Image 1 (tube, rainbow, N blue to C red):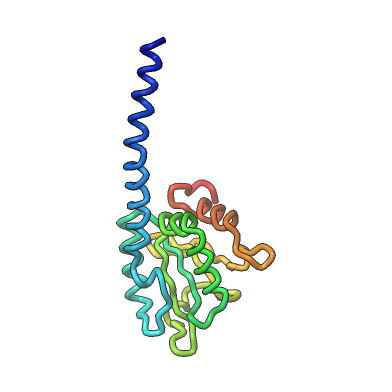
Image 2 (image 1 turned 180 degrees about the vertical axis):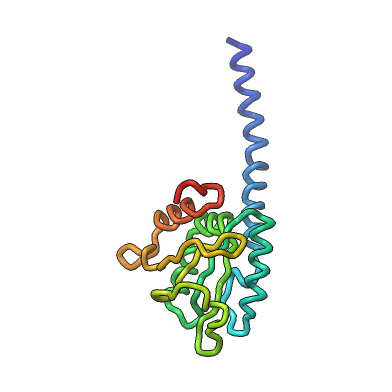
Length: 174
C-alpha cells in the first residue's frame, strides 16, 4: 500500500512538472502556424497576382499535405470581415482551418476582379465564397458561406463539420 501511494505521488509530481512544458510546446506550435501564414492567407489585396499566389498555395499545400481553401471576397465585403472576426474570436477554429487547408484569399473588387484567374471556377453565389481545391489545383467543391450561418452568425459546428469533411486525411467521407 505504501509503495502504491509513493508511486502515485511520484507520478503526480512528474505530471505537475512535465504537463506545463507539453502544453506550452503545443501552444507554441499552434502560434507558429498562425504567425507564419503567408499574406495571401490573411488578407485580400487589390494588387494581388492571383496566379502567383495560387502557385505558391499549391506548392505549400503539396509540401504540407493539405488542401487549398480559396476564399473570394474583398475589403468591401461586410461578411468577409465578420468571418475574419469569427475566426479571431475562435482561435481553435482558426487553428483547425489552417491545419486543414492552405487558405488562398482572392480579391474580387472593381479595382481587381481577378476575372482571368476565376474563369475556370463555378460562379459564386455571393461573398465571401469558398472553393475547396486539391493540392494539384483541381476544384473539388464550391461552398456558399451563408450555409455556415445560423440566426445571422457563423457557427463553430458548421465550420468544424466542413473542415472534417474536406480534411485531406478523410478522403472517404465526402
